[in-house]
Image (cartoon, rainbow, N blue to C red):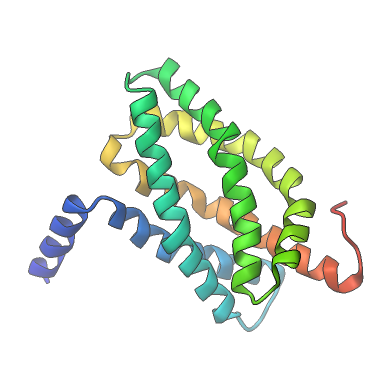
Length: 186
């Protein structure tokens, strides 16, 4: 068993993106399942959890890794000031991109049309991004100031567990509203 862990550690050290991909492949579907349980579902929708896993692993982890790499080049100095700059820039660049990508990507993974994806994104973007602006600058300031670079994506993936539960809630809420004919969040 030690040999297996050694190989995994060597692989993730050689390919740091793989750490984030493995983290998101696990954390995102668990977040979806937790949200389903909080909602009161007795039977979990494992296909929904699988979509969350695919999206987290194959889209979120690579884009987040890319953003972290770019941020490291743009703001190479360690410290609180640089960390705050990175966090603020992220909220106005990667943040909106991530929210739009989530709603459109998940809608398409569910078999929805491009029009469905655009409509849901229009409805859900602002309330989701407003919440993100309250949460992520603090998380990312800690991340950029105190977490070693090689562990930043896994740290963010752990912090994103609660965020994923929130996104799953918002995504499910959107579906329920569409079925009742409502198109705004109250």
